[in-house]
Image (cartoon, rainbow, N blue to C red; front, top):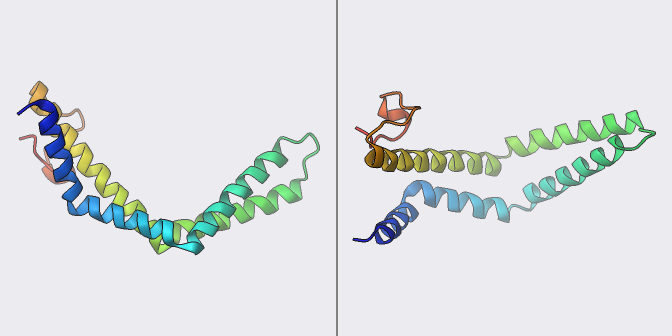
Length: 129
């Protein structure tokens, strides 16, 4: 098999992995949640308003404090939203999977363990030794 054929097979196998499917489902839920999308848009608008006010020569410190409090509230609400939490957890799992795959490929090319290897395969998914 050619290298790119092997890469294509690996990509197909990864696409079918439960962790990838979980991430895909989490992304769809994130995009479909109107409450979460509203908070994300407002968060971005508030950030821009804060930046605009901070760069003014005559800053309104009360206005800045008000915006910052709203940003903090939105941030906490977003981070604690179950759909956003699921997206973050699913993304972290996929990141771990991809790191383990890359480490396995690197090991098989170089024969060297990744510098972050703890010799406890439960920390990376194994595949090195």
